[in-house]
Length: 250
Image (cartoon, rainbow, N blue to C red; front, side):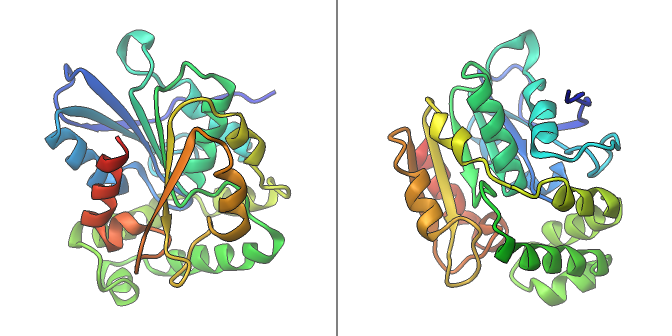
């Protein structure tokens, strides 16, 4: 049985705004790194709330780092009054977690947007994921992150360095170990709410492309666009285009 933890939050926009969004980050990151979406949604009249996933940021540490555990945590996150979220955005690992949560409870959110989501990680892809996380643990200063990501905004550089210092290395390793069959395709197939996927450019690096994308998008509730010339975190490399695709989908 999965025991959820309560996730810390930060928010953008008027708490009384009529439209409310939940922002869920990827592996090795933190809620603050979803700031591009938070700022843009707040400017558009929304209230946006980001969470730190278990083992990340300032969230509680735990023993369970299965996808089901991540999903259980976000599933108990509600706006005030237990109303549905109007929108949930999930990046990478966060995309898998929110897909599982939405499939399990169709009234949890009215709409999903997934940013290069980790809906399936094959054995062949695990090495690339491990390498990227190992590199992140070495990039603990702003200059370290800037060296590898010269196109990022200064705040992304600062926050990525911070998130690398905050996250539990053990939690990241266990997320890999405890999910030998990393696969949320059945949950994606079960979605019955409008869902849009903003994919990364496979010519740069994407974990949601090819046969996986083709299979998932057979669900008529799911649409997809791609941010060209941007890798796995398009909201950091090409934020304006990523946000344009977000609002086009909404």
